[in-house]
Length: 123
Image 1 (cartoon, rainbow, N blue to C red):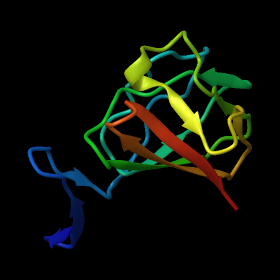
Image 2 (spheres, helix red, strand yellow; image 1 turned 90 degrees about the vertical axis):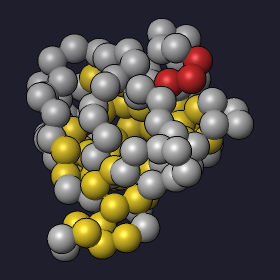
Image 3 (cartoon, one colour; image 1 turned 180 degrees about the vertical axis):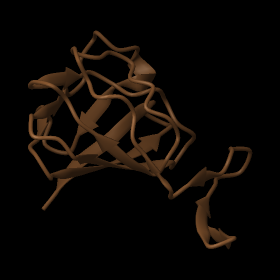
């Protein structure tokens, strides 16, 4: 990790650097497979109703994302859901779906060995 012009950058060998600037993709208006939410470390997601996200576009080995639900509706990260490509799936620490309620956060880190986003809810 390094600071460049006041921004913390993280990178792995051969991977593009990802900024800790927040990414705020468009509000989820439907369930999403293989979600391409961008490469920002801090992800600010919201939805118009309770929505399922079955996976997120694969990252580089050890790349991390902090996913915040900044909306009022639940966002459910579906554990090992076959609707997303295998390399994009969530693998939760509990083996169950994870519900991000309003103002809740999950930490996801990409594990290239298992080709999954390892994800857990934060208190």
